[in-house]
Amino acid sequence: MIKVFIGENSGFCFGVKRAIDKIVELTDKKEKVYSLGYVIHNPQAIEKIKQKGAEIIENPEDILKLSNQNSQSKNGITPIDGKVVIRTHGVKKEITETLKKNKVDFFDATCPFVTRSQRIVEKLSDQGYGIVIFGNPEHPEIVGVVSYAKTKNVFVVQKPEDVELIPPMKKIAVVSQTTQKLDDYIEIVKKLIEKGFEIRVFNTVCEVTVDAQKEAYEIAKMSDIVIVIGGKMSSNTDKLYKVCKNITSAYKIETADEIDPSWLKGKKNIGIVAGTSTPDWIIKDTIKKIEEITGEKVKIQRVGKKNKFSAESFEWE
Ligand code: SF4
Image 1 (cartoon, rainbow, N blue to C red):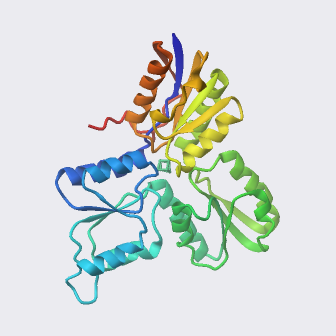
Image 2 (cartoon, helix red, strand yellow):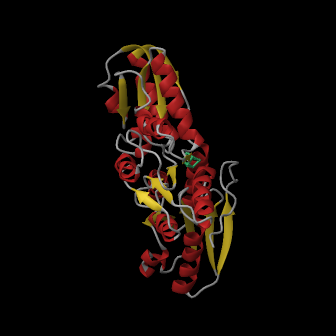
Image 3 (tube, rainbow, N blue to C red):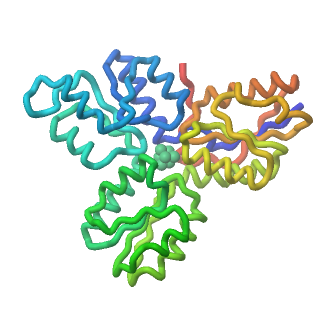
């Protein structure tokens, strides 16, 4: 008998579920759907929605070209023959504004936690605050949030040393990418105090990811090995992996087929954690694969407490 520990907050969060549900609802109604960017960072889930008929516009700015091709109006980009869905990470402000201005039929699946960061940056920059954003400058969420700043004084930092390069400012507002580790954000804030007279700190780290990281830590302590499931581009999956590998052997996979049988040899306590964009079916496949490889039954033990923003168990037909 093998014990498998699984975090209560592994798998879809409400932001991801809301976006996927909407696309499935539209494709089931046979509507043409364009996803503006990868709606979530999980290639297998993206493949599923493609099979259902959704089209992915990889670079959100291409929506303008596409709509021009389809346009029957001289100046605008309407009408577009379908519904546009904005990804959970959000897009640049000008893209949303263009969609609105041209009356494109769209559903904004930007996670409300990301929308909150966008609003803070917009409002505080308008009030004369310099903006500091902790995150990966190339991540779509950060590209979007930066675009809401109404100032040139906007700085994206990835580590405490980056703060040293920021010029002193009277007033500073700081936000974090939703999927960053809270402890790392605190280190940034500590450094930032030297940079201004007034620092306004907003806790924009998503609480589902905070809880998932705490669980990953507990699971890693109990396990001989942890399998971390999620898309290679998924920022929150990467954080979970980093938490686990500091404690025990940890391996990152996108699908169950990637499990190397040698990882499981002689292991009796196996942890499974999954990012917030990892579909249920891949978690289930992983459990089955563990049974298959080891030839033993698994006993599942859930770890942690479900956050209110975690999605209920998601079944995909
Ligand atoms: S991980 Fe958090 S911020 Fe990201 S989509 Fe899910 S609920 Fe929203």
